[in-house]
Every structure is written in structure tokens, then in C-alpha cells.
Length: 109
Image (tube, rainbow, N blue to C red; front, side, top):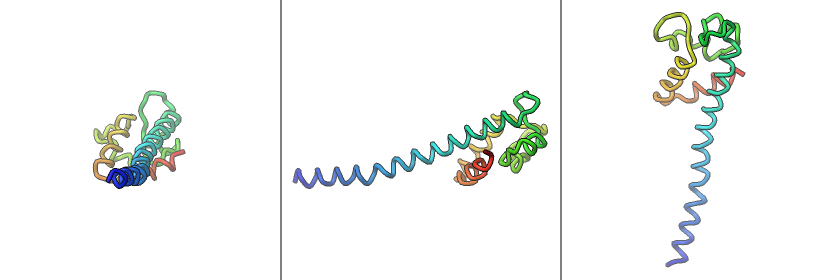
């Protein structure tokens, strides 16, 4: 009986380890994409005011922000902050669409 329980425990650990690693990699991948997007945001922010206009996003090659600018700019002020972008990404993740956020931001290198 002890041997059977030990085998099941080892088997369970072997099966669950890749699943846990996969979940962590997904979160890590999203975090890496957001970090890269933040760096690209800073590079595109020519006025260094912490805000991007749609023109700055397009010229700065921040495709994710340029493509989704109107949805990100919920206050309709014509400029977006990193917080606005992060809120939009959270919104996408809450809708269960992380692929859209990560695939688009990975093009923003």
C-alpha cells in the first residue's frame, strides 16, 4: 500500500510540474511583453512627458498602441499613458484574450 501511494505521489508530481511551469511561463511571457512595450513606449515618447499621441505611437513603431489607440484612450484626450496601456491590457486579459495582447506587443520590439 505504501509503495502504491509513493508511486502515485511521484507520478502526480511528474505530471503537475510541467503544468505549473507552463502556467508560470505564460505569466512570465505576458510580463516580458509588457516590459518590452514599456521600453518601446519610453523610446517613442519624444516629448518625454510620459504620454504618447497616436502620431508618436505610429512614428515610434509601437504597433500595439497605435493599432489600439482609440480603445486605449478611454478619456478621449488624444494621448495615452503607460497606465492607460496597462489598463487596456488588463481589460484584454480579463476578457480571456491574452494572445491578442502578447502577439501584438511582441511585434513592438
